[in-house]
Image (cartoon, rainbow, N blue to C red):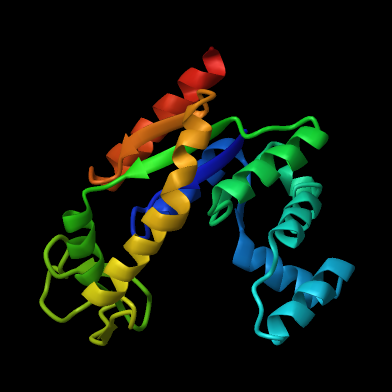
Length: 219
């Protein structure tokens, strides 16, 4: 199954991708990971991407499409893949469709995780994690059972991501609305889009996604 996950920052795409990977035996493809792997391998595409990034420029869409095409040719994508972080614009979505069409492939479903933005901001700015084991917590929704002590490892040091602040989150949401949200109608027009409520409990969101995808396989 070939999937694309859409949703604003903090909507839970990474968490749900892990469940989908296990269920369908498919890898999650992150553009950042693909770029780093190509550069590390020293492939022709990787060398080109490296020179562009070292010059301080953005990697152009056509190169990203080539990287994705190369990546989905690998053996672990035999059952499909999950795209996360690309496409971000309508032009990229159209280029991706063309590339997949040339390979007689397509995205089976595009999962859009919708959120209440006020609630999302609260969710993001309140999260923190254990320095020692990485266990995640939240000021409101998930505090340690014993104050100041990690439930998992007993650690007493916690940290927050520097970009988990209101100003940064609002800026990232604005960027999402301007650049990425407009691609939703592109996928909605041909019936590939399914939407789930990302403000529900993590397990409920995952169950809703699974049900939608399983139903589509039975159609």
